[in-house]
Image (tube, helix red, strand yellow):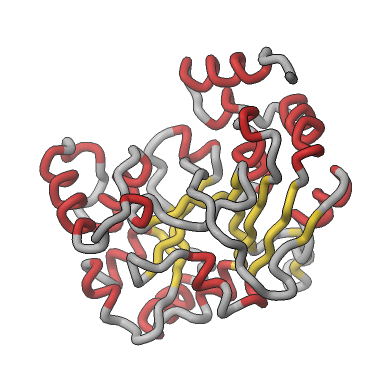
Length: 275
């Protein structure tokens, strides 16, 4: 999961950010609105994304290519499908291929999210070279976001009794990216769960957002729907405390990136001096 971006201006509306000042306030903000009366359980309906710099926008890796990037999307995906081994996908659909491509770092219109606020906190505090700047946790209510998708997609969710799409559900409804783009005059964003490609996807409790418009930065789209999202600002001075508490809770690279790569990343950060 890649949770970094490039600096950009904040979204401008009165509820754009919640600035916390303590660990307790942070937990309250992360789990706000998680009570679901219908089932009598605490089940948050938010997708979370952690950014080590609060100034980073919600831009996809495709947008960050720069230049005239939108027409390149189909070439990137076509060649990925051409050269990648067929066994890397369980089904030959564009949504399966997009999931695998995003997971392995190909520029796509997808954006990484997690169901876990603690996973988002990890990515917001994993880079100690950015501890001199504020971090941010974005939260988007995916149920409310899906009320804005076209009827063909919303009815598929209702038929399944689901809150989030799967690649199989998308494959049964829409066959291609051009078909997705032609569904609606107004841009929309949906959230879907990728196949369990490997332990990283599973351990990070990961899923993706996808826009009908490949040029749309998600924070710009969200600016028109302030009621479905929130943004928590983590002051730079709190990062060390949060990071240490996450480490003690075993919320580390060793868990999210199983294998020697994650182990060495955790050890390197864990034993780095504070200064």
